[in-house]
Length: 254
Length: 323
Image 1: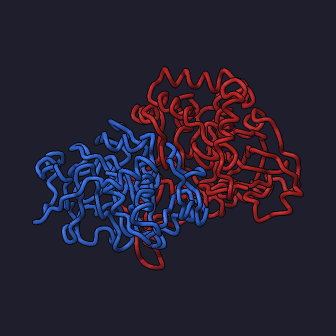
Image 2: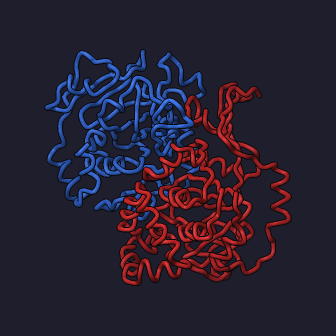
Image 3: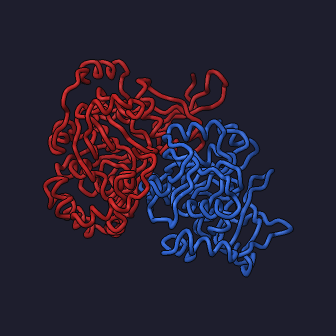
């Protein structure tokens, strides 16, 4: 999942990085294929080259903000995102629906008495609203891939009708771009805005992937086979970034 | 401007002229020594029912010792701005200090989630960015600022934002109301006795928080002279007249870190994480780290210890940029 996510981060782009796993993916991408990628963090760090080994919980601290190009603050960073400067955002999520709407707030049908309450938006709403493209990283579980999310924390393609985001006042040509799980990769159909299966991990069948989803995504004629982590990716992850397996162990179990 | 949609979340907005009048009469222009013990700062400036905001995060440059003092003094019915918060909302809620939370990020651990599920804590939904933008509006003395965030989400529905048709472009845009906290808490690297303060490194919104808040309590790693401040004014983050109290609190961010001074205490965070989902463990945690010690100094002496303090200082090997 970390490697699939890292592979979507292009060199030379400005990439908005969320807490936890996206940080690891960003370091991996930067060490392998994207040395000129500029990481951006909501609390204001621009262009850091995080120190490794990666220490758990590090985000606003010196190890993650090491060798930055600029240190600003939250209003400045989100203004720059709103201005159109951020090419890619990477987000975690609790629930996602067929149009890429993301829930990280609550489960249940009654907002006032949630069955389960989660931390809420954090900066996710800004990322999915403002970045030109957004990658959502999520565990591959049936209860997470739902027809309709219980709560729209951050906007995907809304009801999927053409121009729904623009009508609501959201920035043009933005929205979810890829959904990454431990087993599969999804995109969104340009016309219908529905989630579509782009690839499955080598050794996993399409049927196994679809079984773990409440809705049926579009399936293209050619579903790509996703390569498992390469020896080089594993070497950087295990030896440079996370030798104590504080983060990659968790991702592997998922 | 037609209101197209209005969020139903609870919030209040200050009258801008009332705010100006407060700033005119209550914020002292003269440079007076504002250094005082944390207990006195909290007693003097934080009342039951207040809206409290803080900067920057639980892990980095957060005013943790001031939050512990609020809990020690058992303030009640506070409304807390959780704009980049991982543990403070849980500690305050578990201690019975909170009535409600403005949610950027509610906090880590299942206890705080449970408090919301059971309706013991009220929440109004925002996002990290829009909650911080509300502080900027408050800092500017205007009643709201526009944002393209929040639109078309349930987050907006349960926020206090309104969607209007922007009179310039005719497109829908969200307006977020200003927030002027009763109290802002900011931990800084250095300040003088009057409150001219320096924060190094990135941060969420130290200046906006100090400007927007009616009372600002600063805790500091180090007290320096005003001569030092005047030698390098571009380093000043917060000017003295925004500050009401200065608390000398070395290691005041623990278990978080202060950039370039000491690293965060990862072991402590793991202990906290274990307590954040378990009521019994949380009671024990609160008792051990807050109620059984009388002040920050005793916390450092009896609950952290010199060996750990020295180790956390030693770990802060990355200094560049933080001075």
